[in-house]
Amino acid sequence: MYFIIYFAIVASLFGQSIERKSTPLPILSENYGVLTEAVGWTLTNSGQWVSASNRLPYRDGKSNKLSYAEYSIGRENFKKIELKKVKLDEIDYGLLLIYRKSGRYAYPNIFEGWYDFDELVWYAFPADKIKEVADKDIVFNAAYVVDLGVIYSGRLNNIEEELSTTNLLHSILSAARGEFSLYSDYKVSLALFPIEDKSTRVMRFRIAEENCLFSSGKSSDRIKTDTFDKSYFEVDFVKFVDLVNGLEE
Image 1 (tube, rainbow, N blue to C red):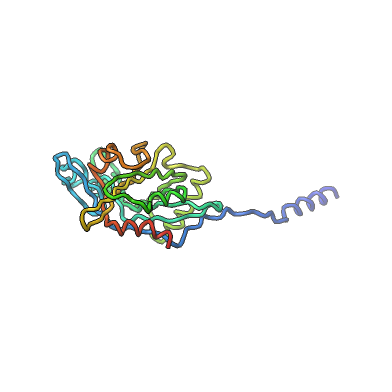
Image 2 (cartoon, helix red, strand yellow):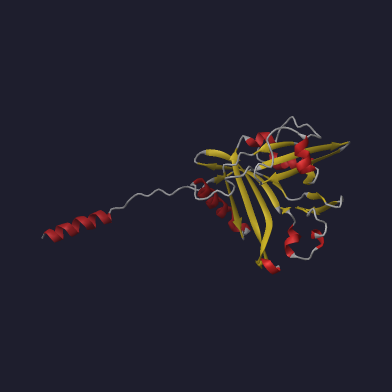
């Protein structure tokens, strides 16, 4: 008799539904800016400037002529750069997305077995940092740097266009939970150099993923020496403005 009562109580407890709340995914903004074309310029060790579409050539001129597949993607490259906003836990963040080519050798010691893949690197940062990038009082012919103050970051390999958005949102959520941090010990900065020469306006830029490569603030000789005197991406000024202002449309 006691066994039957005990079994009935247990069965009743397990039969009750327990409410479980799922963690909502972050929400991406509908408006965004995009950049798909820029010219990468590098000053080689021989003193010659060389360029390539959407990638920075190597400073060693010989490397740019080697047939090894790894040199075809350059020192840095991108297929597309996007600026968006993402809402996470009711807080808005700026979101910098860099779609680029990457790859590796299966046998790196003998440079054999190369396979390439598409890669997405993302950075979430305080939304008000966008205003610093879109400074209304831009001074031409003077370089400046914006420390994005990255809070979360991540990388996705072998992405597919139709699946990348879902994977991105899961990646952001995982980073926010503290499961990983791609650049926890690094400063991620955007170095900008607006150039005006007669009727021509362009923006030179670099995205730094290196430890304390730049210091925040307006133009300095060190910034120009360390970056823009050696390599940079260059794009029509209006296209760069469209990249930033696309968030506000």
